[in-house]
Amino acid sequence: MSNPCWFVLLLLAAWLGHFAMMVASHNWFYAKPFPRLVGDLVQLFHVILGFLGLGWVFQGVWILSFHQGNSWPDSLAETYSLLAILTALIGVPWFESKRWRLKHSVSINKLETEKKHWPSSWAGEKMAWRLPGNQSLFLEIRTIELPVENLPLWLHGLEILHFSDTHFGGNDKRSYFENLFNEASKRTPDFIFFTGDLVDAPEYLSWVVPLLGRLRARRGKFAIRGNHDFWNLPEEVAKSLRRAGFCCLGNGQVELDFGNGNMGSLLGNERPWNNQVNQVEAAGNSQFTILLAHTPDQAVLAANQGVNLAFCGHVHGGQVRIPFIGPLLLPSIHGRLFDHGFYKIAKLIMHVSRGIAGGFPYRFNCLPEIAWVRLVEGKKGTNP
Ligand SMILES: [Fe+2]
Image 1 (cartoon, rainbow, N blue to C red):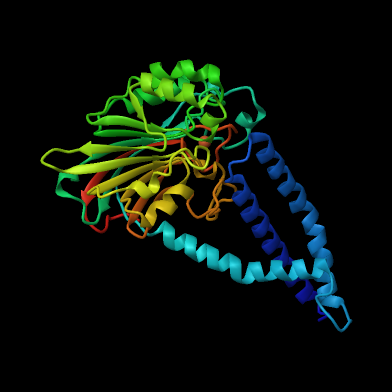
Image 2 (cartoon, protein in one colour):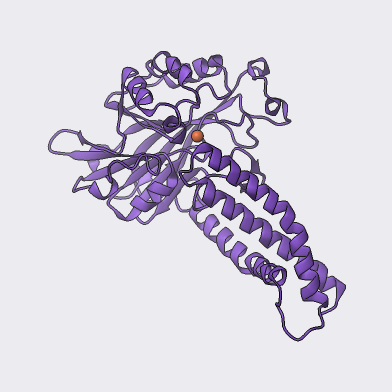
């Protein structure tokens, strides 16, 4: 094959495939419970390999296109380039179609979406705050009616506030959180669920009681911890959450008594950062089971184990979401599959929150969020 047009087409396909493989590899490794420094080195490795690979793939496609020898692929560069081309032609379309199907697997009723924006004078010192289009000082308050098939009668109308990934002390000033939790405390739902990454530095645990303590729930406030909490005195994080009125589930389970013999179950899952108890298999015979997991990867594992509803955080929606494409980098072994919103996997419905803050103070096309979710019986809502 020696046509220059074919060379250009193959090169573009190979570069796309190489990029897709680097992104998938980065996300897979980033999801693993490495110590923070190792995780940072893995990220750096992927950046370097990503750029070096462009030249390597160029060389491989050049040989594939213009090589006159009898045997090919006869070098590592050629073999890798061929793999990259196959990834672009088969792997990428297959993954994206799966992602599209999952994105549309749950239809909800969007009742209300309120947006808040607080002044840029609240931004921190880091350069990333001043990058164009930064939405870190926004907040989206979503009110959703979620149809759940075969929902027990005693759960009709159950109201839940779900928020995640506050990362106190990471970047946002306390004034941002004061306003956010004032908004969140305006209503009293049945349950409040927090799904981890409370603090980025232990000295900010002093914020927990004044901020989260003002939230009220009729039936209880429940929390699990995330990877950042396990990097920052996890026992102290649990104590602070308890002082703010939250039941810290860990990898445990609590029974929920709705009266008249109607029992539900609430599970916590802090894996893979806390492996003390394997509770997902312990869903038991509860009539309705809700799971709080920091990472959606764990909720996906629970899909065939009797869990009905799951709430997760951790992935921050990817933080930078390219229009029509979505995020590229997020810490999940499933890559970009579960970035934010509702997903149905077998009988499980999972809500993945975009979270509130993060270690990197930049969000594009990815507003921080809190979600009010009201359960109703049914198969379908009006909005996908
Ligand atoms: Fe987080």
